[in-house]
Length: 171
Image 1 (cartoon, helix red, strand yellow):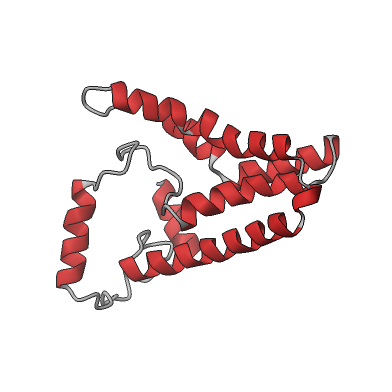
Image 2 (tube, helix red, strand yellow):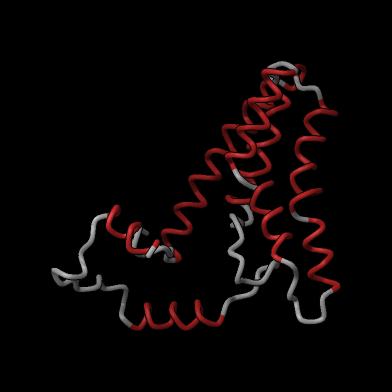
């Protein structure tokens, strides 16, 4: 995966999930080694609020929808609440305004678990809110597999730097 090929193969996706599982293991280890120091109501609240705001409303809307089409605001709420950046801001503000504490491990445990165990990350706006294979991705994956995963041959006009790719994507 790079700036011009924003996809993962089954193998690279498994490697990415393994990295998240290692992070999850570290966070769980820290929580377990500090069990007596964790304020459990805070831990549970921080763990649950991510899905309470970011997932459950969208999941309910999705299940109530006849065709699975739901407002994009549910995706935005999911992505904001399941963002590592949001969790870092929440943890930073909590540590500054309340106090640094082991209960804050609920945030990475939740997010690393979502990514490592379930394979969930941020939701693209043009996919199903709940996991459903997108027909265009199924077609792409089949074509990629037929090619045998051989690298694409790049001519001089196809090779761009990451900065070039970004500036061309904005045009």
